[in-house]
Length: 113
Ligand SMILES: [Zn+2]
Ligand SMILES: [Zn+2]
Image (cartoon, rainbow, N blue to C red; front, side, top):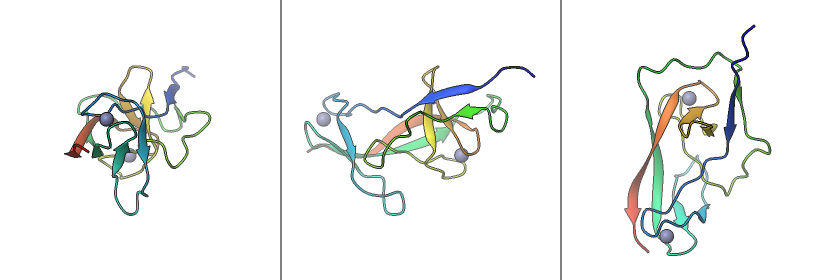
């Protein structure tokens, strides 16, 4: 067997207004993806887009972050399967831990505080 595990880390996002990394997610995926910058109060919603043409990792080869992010940390949903198990791979790209789709992050609904 080839060793091809994809190690991941928690999502990190920078505020689109001030660049701060202090982003708080205070809602739940069942409701909305409204995030707030702790420094300037800008709100935004992260979304993902599928990266086409990149082979998906084999099932089970994606290693989730350890420890897993808690519910107040930045969260985005997979553009393909809507799972919130979206993590950052070492390459800087995002990958869905549920379906293996490679994703890019987009910030939407930006409202400066
Ligand atoms: Zn900010
Ligand atoms: Zn997915």
